[in-house]
Length: 89
Image 1 (cartoon, one colour):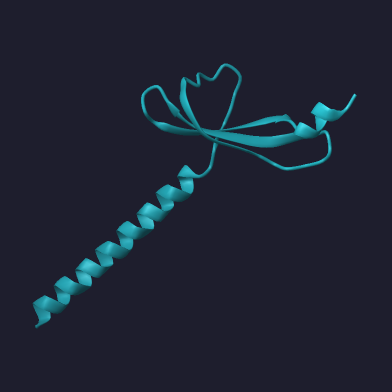
Image 2 (image 1 turned 45 degrees about the vertical axis):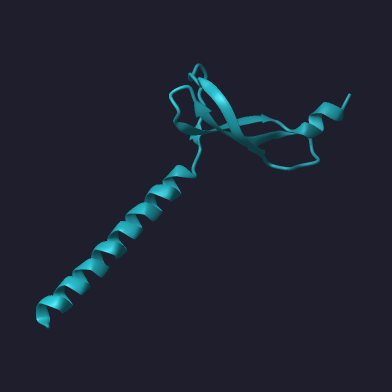
């Protein structure tokens, strides 16, 4: 009975630790890498683009998630002028 309890406890502890490690990896993956001038992008396919919604013409944060030519999913953050600037003279 003691060996059975020990194995069950060890299995549950291992599952909990691996779950925490996976959650930590997913949290890190959601943060976009900041773009710097000259950074090679090698975009094969764009998955999603996101930017802050605003009605004011100003610089905003945006990010793009894409698959590069090697098949790796990348998430890059950058700054740009808001869409509101397109409609001003």
